[in-house]
Image (cartoon, rainbow, N blue to C red; front, side):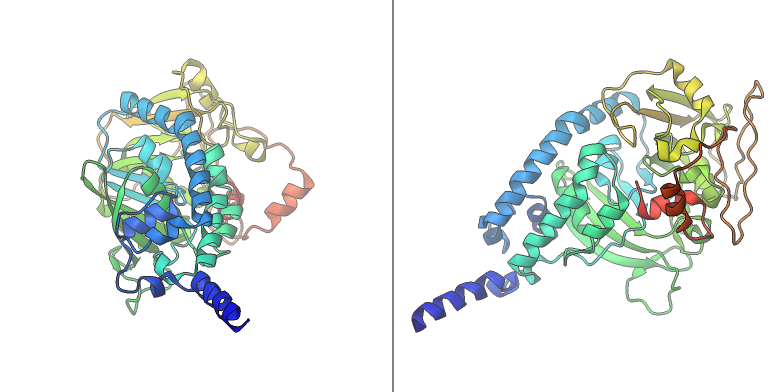
Length: 434
């Protein structure tokens, strides 16, 4: 009986013991960590090899294999083919605002970028160290990652509240585990990861640097390599990019230092239609050569036809009902003669449209520019006046006058809980769909 008790106790200890206790002579590389989280086997000799022999990890790997195989055949390979044919002369820098940890689609649309700049409200979390987690915690964390990715892999966008819950519900917290998964599943090799905060000049400083502003943007830098060995960098920022945070956090100076690049916007809750995000909208219009977006991005009325060529792809179905007030008649006219696409992204993921805005005029100078919406030649588009930034919620700017439909009482009550100093769309970025 004593021997049986000892055997049972030993088995329980081994099951719950941190992996560091099993292989404390060697730490796991960032790439091995990414591969294990992604359901892919680590390198031979990795201290994480033993982990992949358990039923929990093998089930995780089987589920991820099925999920990623499905999104690959349904969307990603089609997107890569379309991007290669239609998006010529890509820039080395990609700005992907309102992204959350969605490296998967950033890489599919812009595989040739060498610097990816992504921004969302979700925290980075700590750098994952699987050797310091019990097998039980690790199994729970992997399941949390699977759940957090369900909407993006099925519909191409995150449901923010669900993702935020799953990214904080286990010890596998933050966006870094998700970024690791997407990098590994995209065939990348993760070489290094570090955390930082921005100083007042927009320069990255070690996370624990004293004297930094409490508003300083927090971020993670991941260095990774393509299958051909080309080294690239991904910056993920956890920061407020509304007008009251974009400059105050140091993020504006960071992205301005990178010069001109390409930009990508999808499933962005129509925030760029709002006066509360005019600084970000102006940045995109003055610092990009190519802006690829769905209809949640910059309203078409802001593109000066003397400076931009607008190429519509797919179908403009209009906003989903919760954002019905952002319907753009000019967008509908633009998409009446569009090129077909065989994939969908964004809220209307079954039948969606993408607008490729290509700059034809000179790139703007570094001086601040307040880009105003452009009236149509026929006069059927009204000039939008930006709402003043004050204690009340600024009105959402649309490029054309269209009465907003009455909202159900539940939705109105839901919006009433949004912070009073932000436009209503901020609520949906903060806790809704993205």
